[in-house]
Image (tube, rainbow, N blue to C red):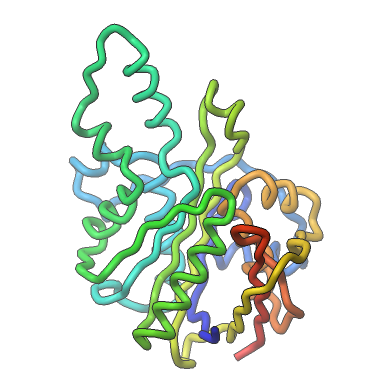
Length: 263
């Protein structure tokens, strides 16, 4: 599959948006770990703002970061949301409640626990009525999201915003799902080259192959720690194209081989 990247976004500890992170991802500036401060998200009405969990806030923030680079409006922009875990903190609270004597779960907690909650809050925040897909493929969710988004671009000849995000689980679930850091990435994919295009992508499915690693050891630790951070090599390639093929793990022993060339 072939498509163009009109914009990218990234939010993580020490990576505060595409513009501030581009030199870090290109290897021009050393990466430094800094705690992530949850955004206020004034784009949401006050009631939804109080209800929104960290995963949805992260997804909206990184999606808006990509849109800011593109100068695009969102009303008719299709979206793909990819997350391996959704809201682990909330799932943990629901599990604790169900394991106790009082098993009542609030409607707000329940509707925030579903996997497409971030997509719902995105539509409220942006006023978008465009189609949206929410998917999960465990540690291979980024690759699955890229396949889905690129397939939509090829089939429908329309632009698609891919948003990948994952946040840590608390204990005791953290012991079973050891994700320590949060990470979000966004890619605005287009069928045709435009004035804002930053790279052309060629995506191939291949059997096996070792995943591309980050040269910076701290960024590599982040890539290994968070499933959404498997997108880091692609972000690095976009920060400094052209690049040789990068490899991102996919399901069942497969992988995606992605080549980014300058526009």
